[in-house]
Each structure stands twice: as C-alpha cells, then as structure tokens.
Length: 521
Ligand code: MCA
Ligand code: AMP
Image 1 (cartoon, rainbow, N blue to C red):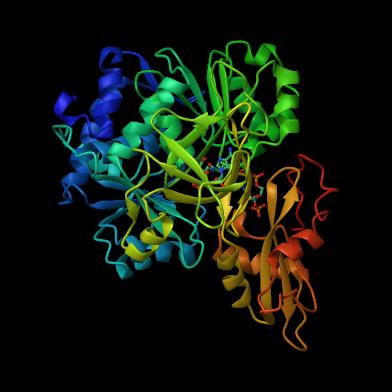
Image 2 (cartoon, rainbow, N blue to C red; image 1 turned 45 degrees about the vertical axis):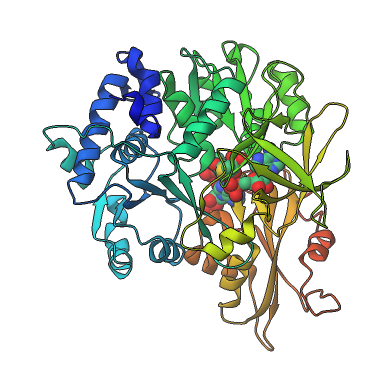
C-alpha cells in the first residue's frame, strides 16, 4: 500500500484515498460482478507482477486495445502501480490506424482481445512489440491467466511527478496523430483539482458509460471514483440502462450526444435521478437547448467543463453558484488560462482569442516529436489549445466559441479531416476530396465529405463508405459523402473546407434529432 514517499505514483494517490475503505465496493457492473478495494488492490498487485515478470522495466510502454470491462479498469491500475506507461487504444481502430500508434510509440507489450490476436500479431511483430497478451471482456485471456499464477503482488513502484503514466494519441493539426505524454504528476494534480471543485465524496457512486481509452472516461471518471467511492461500470452506453443505473448513484459524466440520447429516453424523469447530485458534460460543446431540456425534465443543471488531452481538465462551471449554459465556467484550482489574439498579445476584455493554459496538469510533450511539442507551446511556455474562447467580463465565465484547427468534434470523438481525406483519395476513382464538419442534431458535428471523381469514374456513396470502414474506425467514416464536380478553392488554390461546411450546413437539419440511423447504409 502507498506510503507518503510514493505519492507521485497516481496509484499511490488512489490508494491513499481507499486505504480506509478496503471492504467497500470499488467497481460494480450492473447485473454482474462486484469487487472490493481489498480485492482490487490485491489483483492490481498480481497483474502488475505478471506484467513486470515479462521483463518489462518501469517506464516501458504497454499498448492496450481491449473492450470495456472491469478488468480493463484493473489493467489501468496495474500499469500505474507497476510504473508502466499505459497506451490505451480504441478497440474500433483498424489495422491501418493501429500501425502508426505501434510503430511510433514502439510499445514493449500489446494487450488485445483474443479475437484480434491473429490479426494483430504481424502488426505487433513488425513494430517490434515483444509481448502480445490477451484480455477478453469476461476477464479471460493470457494476461489474467498469467496473473493468476503470480504468488505475490508487486509493491507500488515509486514514481517521480514527471515520470510518464500514459501516452494518449491525439489528432495532429498537420501530420499523423501525436502521442501526448501524460505524467503521474499531471494526473494527480488534475484529480486533486477536480476532487475539490466538484466536492467529491467518499460515498459517491459514479455511473460510468464512457469509453476507457480517452481522458474523460479513463482519467477524469476513474481517478475521481477510485479514491474510495464506487464506480458503477456500464460496458456500453445504452440510455435505458444508464437511467436505471442512476438508482442509488450520485454522479454521471457524459458527452453532449449522450445527454441528447438520455433525453430521448422516456424513463428519464425526476424520480429516476432522485439520488443524483451531479451531472457533468464535456468533450464537446453542450448545446444550450440540451442544458434547458435536461433541467426541465430532471431538475438538474448539467455542469459543463472544458478539457483537452494535453492539459487535462482546465475550466469548469461551479458546483455551488450559477452554471451558465453556453459557458465552460472558470479555471479549476491551480490552472491558469489566458486568451491571446492573432498577434500573440493578450486579448482585450471580452474579446475572442486562442485559449492558452498553464499549470501542473499540462502534459510533458509529444512522444518523440520535439518540434511538434515546441510548436504547441507559446514562447513563454503556455500551451496553445487551438480553441477560440471569450471571457464574459461580468460573470468571469469563459465560453468556447470556435476552433483555430480544422478538427471535427463528433459525439465527443475528434476527427482530423486530413486523415479521412488521405484514405478517401487512396480509393480508386477519387481524384480529390475535402472533409468537413456539418452541424448535426445528434452528433454535434457530423463528419462529411465531398469527393471529385476522376474523369470517367463513377463513384457511389455507399461503396465509398463501405471501403472507408475497412480502413478507419466507424466514427471517422463520413455520415455523408457527396460526389461533386469541383471543390471550392481560395485565391492560393487551397481547398476551402469552411465554404463547403457553410454550403451544406442544412444537410442534416432534417435528421430526426435522436435517430440512430441518420446515415445511408
Ligand atoms: C459511434 N459512431 C459515431 C460516434 N460514435 N459516429 C460519429 N461520432 C461518434 N461519436 C458510429 C458508430 O460506430 C456506428 O457506426 C454509428 O455511429 C451508430 O453508432 P451507435 O451505436 O449509435 O453509437 P454508440 O456506440 O452508442 O456511441 C455513441 C457514443 C460514443 C456513446 C456517444 O460516441 C461515445 O462514447 N462518445 C464519447 C467519446 C469520448 O469519450 N470522448 C472523450 C474524449 P456504423 O453504424 O457505421 O457502425 S476526451 C476529450 O474530449 C477531452 C479530454 C475532454 O474534454 O473530455
Ligand atoms: P481531445 O483532443 O479529445 O482531448 O479533445 C479536446 C477538445 O475537445 C478541446 O480542444 C475542445 O475542442 C473540445 N472540448 C472539450 N470540452 C469542451 C467543451 N465543454 N466545450 C467545447 N469544446 C470542448
């Protein structure tokens, strides 16, 4: 168990919180198993020993591409405890996407679903991955089998605050995704700030319906809950099941698309949320109409906050005090933010400019990419988010009003247009393409493409989408692909995605707000 000297290891921070609650439930899956902190701690020790027993030294990187499960949470804890660096990957990624992560990060081990082992083995070999282990959602696989044979758990591996805890790949403005190196110090600082800001309580029960491979679901949710309170883990987001899980729970964290889907669920009513104290939204802008509709239906004002992989959570509406819809609140404890104009000077009061962040949760840099790291920071060390923000001088609240980057935010996932364009243009018959975001009632923005056929080629939307699905995770596949004669260009000859987005802004206006079938199949 943790001693004060090991507090820089995030696991030590969690263990210091749960030490007095070893016999309470740590993680439960509705209708499934429960595990107490005592058992979780013991298992994390065994899994950590099994991983280190492979010859992995502290600091070694372990890529993880598994389905969401209680064991996936346990694996995260084991990696932290062992001082190994967790590289979480969306199980929907296709081999073409995975190859970049593996060859760039060069992990020493990869944990995957047994069903994908054969497909991933050659990729892993090609990237020099020494150990390929498996973990299935029911808790089986070669990693748990190895852990079961361990006689003694691994004690907590001491870590310094600037030792890496995780590498999370995030879309680059130009070029392929970059690995954001997040340290134990970053994670502990952010967990502490959120604990204070959101008044975290020992008896909180968090309903968890987010993926376990992004900051929101893996760090924000787990690192708050696993300090002694209870994580109620749902394997996937199903509105009915989520509302049922609110019974006896206190906190929910979601992306706006999830709130839209909850509102479409009749079961969502005041009584269903009677014991809940906090609903948090983030990862994408929460439309004001959703905020109001949710309050009307449940009596709860959703607390919207803002974050980014590279900086953790930075701004939050208050726990006590007005939660202003359309804003992301004020800086979290210990976080500094500023708004900078196009000349790089502090923007005037109430003016829009780039949001920049400084503080202990700001990441260490991009993996193996010093130039890209340098470009991400202003000369005086503030991180440049690429988001446009404005501060309301009267309330002090910040609002995110746009983006400097061409990034598309769809249901909380981020899609880089260039990546999709590259894959589209590799398809036979496609001369050129442009990918852009269009407002969508359910996804916030929907990835949308315009393609120009090569002379005499005939392009079919459904066939193009099907071909892309082989190469890209489904959320990156454009909901619509429009075949056009030419793309709009500026005087320099550069394709103007913004003009396309403007031209097609009503493309999804007719989509039923909560249809699960808003795309042609
Ligand atoms: C699934 N699909 C999507 C998305 N999710 N398409 C566009 N955008 C999406 N976000 C695809 C599916 O693959 C499927 O494609 C079709 O849309 C319908 O899927 P459905 O079953 O309805 O979706 P789902 O599996 O229920 O997922 C919806 C979801 C999910 C639960 C809202 O998108 C989700 O978990 N989003 C949260 C992402 C997240 O955690 N972001 C945090 C990043 P097909 O029919 O073709 O198979 S961290 C971050 O942003 C910072 C740090 C922060 O501030 O938090
Ligand atoms: P990621 O790259 O997945 O870490 O996502 C970070 C991005 O999500 C930010 O740069 C914002 O563009 C967006 N984001 C997160 N929270 C909010 C929010 N509350 N409102 C608007 N955008 C947000």
